[in-house]
Structure formats: C-alpha cells, structure tokens
Length: 203
Image (tube, rainbow, N blue to C red; front, side, top):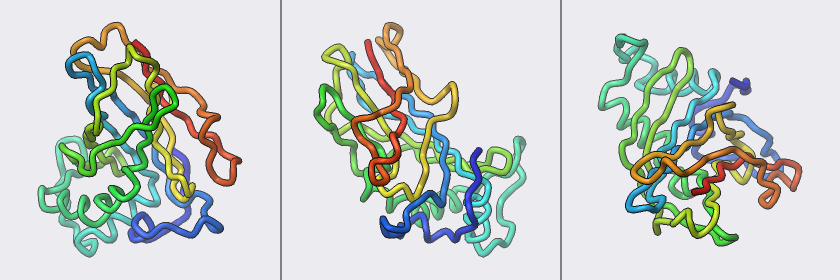
C-alpha cells in the first residue's frame, strides 16, 4: 500500500482545491461487475485505505475510546460504528458518484445515487469499505466493451486497482466474459499529467 501524509477525517469529505490537489489519501480497489439477465447491472466495490488515513478514521471514530471489538480475524466494527462510518466518512461521496465512472462505446453511463450492502472492516492496519452500487441503466457487454474507472477527478485521493486482481465479472452469463485493467488515456486527470487505470469488460 502506498503511504499518505497524516490527515484528519474531514479531508475525505471536503476536498482540497484543485491547485493544492496532489494525493493525500490512497485507496486500492477491486471492482466486480455483476451480471443479471445478460447485462451488467451493478458493481461490487472493495476499497482498501492507506494506513495513515485509517489511523485518522479510527482516532475520530467514537473519540478513539476503543469501542471496536476484537474479532476472530482482527478488529471488527459494531453495527452502530459501521453506520457512523457510512454517515461521516462515505455517504458524501454520492455527490461524486462514489468516484465511479462508466462508459460504453464512448457514451457515459450513470450509477445509482445510493449504495447497498455497505460494510466496513479492518484488514490488518488498513480500513476496508465494501459496497454494491447499481447502474442507473444496465448495460449489455455484447454491444461493446464496458469500461469502469474509479478515480477522483481532483486527484486529492489517489485511487488505483489492486495489482493483479483489480477487476472481475460475476453472475449468470459471466463465464464468457473477461475483465482486465487498462490505462485510460481518454480521461486524463490532474492537468492531464495522470492517466487513470480502468477496468475493461468484454463478453
């Protein structure tokens, strides 16, 4: 995992001005396109945050009073803590479509304004968010490659796929489909100096 400079929780919500963008938070992602009735209907996303941002979140959560429970595989959050994390350190991202961009044949698609199955847990010293977001209109991959990119246009948050396992396809009809990570040179960010990595789905 890449390292971040120390920050407080509110930075994930308020974003720096473009002039001072450069990454302050790092996120590694896995996106799984979910098929229903032969179309991509939803995206399951798995985000893993850098250690410094994780520490800031934990300090903020419940005033760092140690309310996390020691789970079988490490610290786990109570239902109330998950709800608090979603409210204070995630839900505002709906104004940015959860950093999720989708295209087919050069036409931009949209995702739903709310996510489902939101969960938060610790993986060692890293905070992970897992959630599912529906596409506003399901897309047929047989009509052309579908590209799904997860990035922050301001580059305040550096988002990138987990190396070697950043994208997948699941659900009925997915056996003939392929998901791979490509460099998206059509949507540069940070004054054109950064090309985000994007999942390309073909069937």
